[in-house]
Image 1 (cartoon, rainbow, N blue to C red):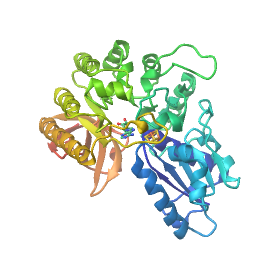
Image 2: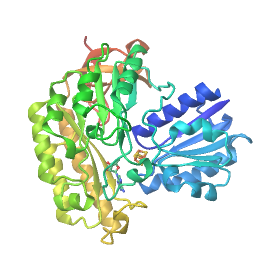
Image 3: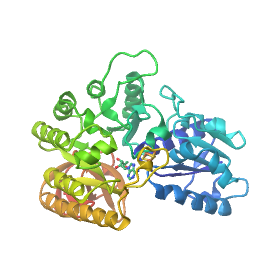
Image 4: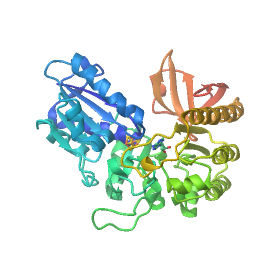
Length: 431
Ligand code: 5AD
Ligand code: SF4
């Protein structure tokens, strides 16, 4: 029996897909395939954070239905499953089941029911022991919490992933140890709001915050690198920044989702911080950890964003000089507060702002990258890529490739940069 799975969206979704593959291979005897035409089960693990992927879902389902094997089943999972539920089967009656982002552990169960719709966003799978499956043997994604307790006015996630519950630290440490025993030297901790870890557990649990979790994880022998995403700027207290800076196992790359540089817009978004707080946290972070690289998410044209507000976003970009940005045009989402805001920004203005922002970033990035030429980075190699190259990441999250073969996979090497590209640097191994 063959399983084809397509995964959209964030790293949490990728991990959910790994969990579903693990359950289906262990309990149901499936093996994965890259060709949906030979699959007995087709899963689409969806994202609903912006409108585009949602509208794509139905056209894709149509294609799967037409070209699949006659008795192959189709399941729609993930965030769009959570928010559309039953409607998916109404619009695409050939879909066999719908499984929400908060119900991944029920994959085997829904598989054997006819037209099952499992989308309970209060379902607590924080202590569910999933079977093992990892796409990479060099790096392990590990969930540390499920759901999100924030109420950002643009965001659908609290409606698709439910309330935030932290996973007991013993389970996380266990997962990390298992991954290290299987050869991974790096772990990647996942949660909507990682530095809010410990706010709520489902059962009795000792008080452990994110900084303490990081300290405990970093004691694992053989574990060399810890990454995480996403922290929330509001929860970046001094303890967290200091632990980040002084703990040698924590990679010096921080994602700080700004969303907007205007305090007025941030208030409308209910982000809980101001432009000044954000800049203050960046200053503290750079003071404690000068080598840190910082990435961010920015939304342009949120309802009511004036030219002046947008200039504030550009101003923060110039002051912080982010190493990487993920930038989006605001997209109204169902069941969010901002969906009802009427002061929307003109589409043309929105497009122009997005281009302006991205051009400024490219300019900054080119300047940053130019300083990398001739520098040496410690790279952890993870992937074989085209033309006999092997790629990996530096501690501060730069993607670097060198000529080489699979002997380099899972190894740390010092690499000197010989040429610069926007998304990847090229170098040669020097030690
Ligand atoms: N419109 C545009 N971008 C959004 N994001 C979340 N919701 C929306 C929306 N409604 C962006 C945010 C978030 C990233 C994952 O997606 O920047 O950090
Ligand atoms: Fe991830 Fe959010 Fe998309 Fe869900 S809606 S897959 S949480 S990015």
